[in-house]
Image 1 (cartoon, rainbow, N blue to C red):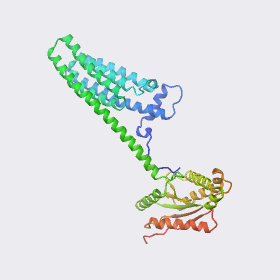
Image 2: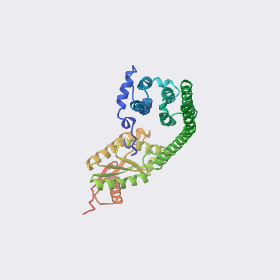
Image 3: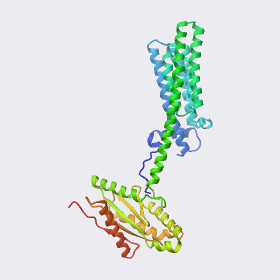
Image 4: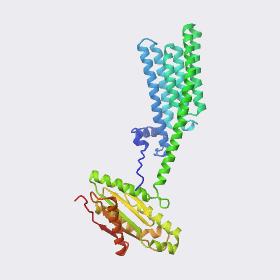
Length: 394
């Protein structure tokens, strides 16, 4: 069925591992998982979890580097990596099994943030040298949560991060009694107290701006779609059809592909309006548009030119195949339109079909198809008339 040209990619096209994740999800479910909208959202959460896992991996690599440089003891790295790996596995199982759907925050972003900050604060308590890692990774965690958490929850994450850093520094001072490290730690906490809330506030404003722009984009798309659609039939309107015909002409000139155009007119439509009323006539137009759209290819472009006259643009198709398409529309209209529109009289169409000739104008192409349609009218109606293409380059 011919539709709008907007290309809307699915989640499976954006993310090649979708089928693999569906298989993994099926391991935790007894019933087969279908590709529903809920599953798509769950797969989106899994992808975000994969992105969050990169932060965890980067933190582990940073700890490993510190250990290789002799700044921290290797046992601290083993401890942190073991705890983080266990937490990561737990969250992965929760997402794959669908257990996260029971939580208020189905992304588990807040829970992951709190767990990661707890491990970072514990590591900081054991190894003060990791103080330099706390700020960048704390900001990364806040940034990853900014678009998923509510403002109050995000603020709680920021307060937790600051409190964790402060407690880690104070607890180390209680054990080691190192005034220099305590002063350094407190200065670091002060810097965090300034940067983290400001960063969270900025992230919140960016999120609001993003949502506002998204809503504006949706409204603009709706307005644009409405502007190119015929209000009565839902098919493309005259302005869009003429622009599409011009575009297809340029494409045919550049690619040497065939281009066919059909003009379709409902027979005795004035009589239909006079006999059964304009409301029933409108229903006939709507039903015919639906029938015709269901009878053409996805790449074909169908629209209402005006009144009871419609246009059908058939790109990259031979004249013979185009004839088969419009003949199918004609026969289906004769056999089914009256029944579908719930009118007693039989409804038929007259169709003029022609093929684009290299170098000719859009007006010449349309005029030839329109002439063929009038020949169908004068020839008895309910028929398809062909007009041969004219090569304007000769």
